[in-house]
Length: 149
Image 1 (cartoon, one colour):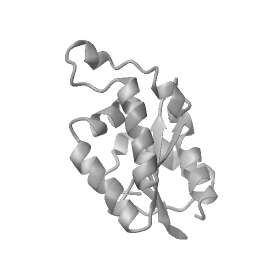
Image 2: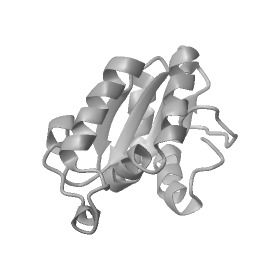
Image 3: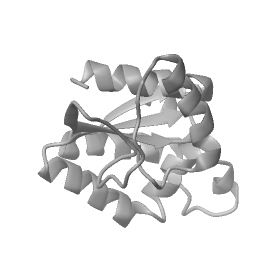
């Protein structure tokens, strides 16, 4: 797990890891937030909400794009795991309403995010998965196992 993950969020994830007997090490990762020792060619970047992803696509876009490029250039499959109770697929993102958009047009809409996601899939091979917060630790382990970890 990356050192920059928020401790308030990791407590529940560590509990899931412990329940599954998963050993973990906290260190700075060049790409993503979670990676398996047995497959360093797959990384999971956890987003605590669709709003966090929208912020990455807006104000933080340059940094976020560099991370996707870095993963792609190093042959690392980047999986974005977005925690959200209502969104279960990329198609659901189209219907997402950003509460910030009522204050200013520069904020991302669901349709804009949907288009951006499809571009990221095509250009960088990024995968998107969605889960509820209470499932995150289990989904991280599951996704890493599915991808050779």
